Image 1 (tube, rainbow, N blue to C red):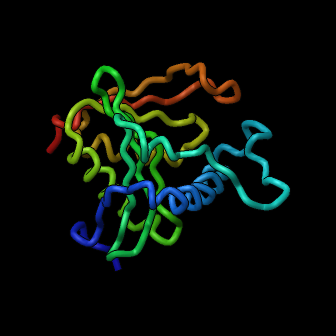
Image 2 (tube, rainbow, N blue to C red):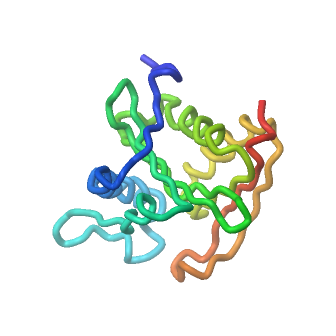
Length: 176
């Protein structure tokens, strides 16, 4: 059964949710390893069997960053971590829906709710090897903006193993 939009919530996360987000981030990295795991040895399974993620605490403590828990009928289903750049552009930092809720249209609803909650200019950057994410973002941004977005390959300096990114840029005010 497909959940309806009204059963899907974005709930502002607080510092009390830090460990929950970090625990889910292990599954986020595991999911990403399917698409991107071959790009460097950084993706190999740690000796203790627990994937690690970047520390996302700053999304809960810094002024221009926002963290949300995704809930489906009150059950935790993932997280959305965003930040606002200097020029006022919103950036989708991290976006994750746990496996149990994947493939049900929930991620599309969550993306749209996020863009509506923070109207304006947006950027979403994706590792080119992450073909599923590129297809997801392109389809959803195209539908949301009625095909008024930009897509380009850029080079980043913060990741020596994967310096290229697919960058989607759009204005969430240009929507249906």
